[in-house]
Image (cartoon, rainbow, N blue to C red; front, side, top):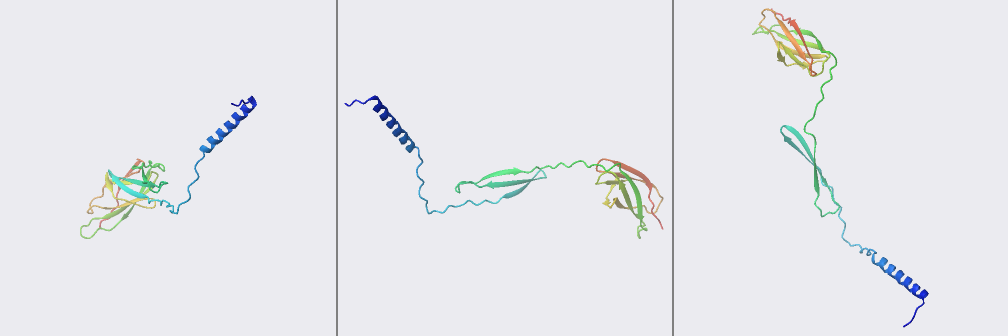
Length: 188
């Protein structure tokens, strides 16, 4: 058996250590990539977005389903449902000042046959907030909007005695204004 001096033993240990490190380093390398194949790569296409409108309790709910594509073409797409709010809160109308009105009349001649009179009542409004409701003697009247207020047409008496009527306008902001007036219809 051969005896090695200390210096030589040290050199052999150093060489063995370097070889061991080199072997460990070689074993942790990733394998070389495989040569490319001739199979074409298929790019996934984006599926269409589907929209469905569902009506529940007379409140329309719009449901949008967005299909998300995945990286692998063999995987099944997943759907993510989203819901839009079903109720929309409308703000309270802001009044444009105190509700006031003036009345203008546009009478017509008595109708032939039943001798009733038609009278168009025009209300010029100031203040309040749209839409406006009109009451005549506490009965609602179908009115139409004008440039500065509302108007309605009423069938009147059979040309009998005049009598006072109360016209009331109610604003969307809750204000109310009333006037008592003699309606000027003409009898022949």
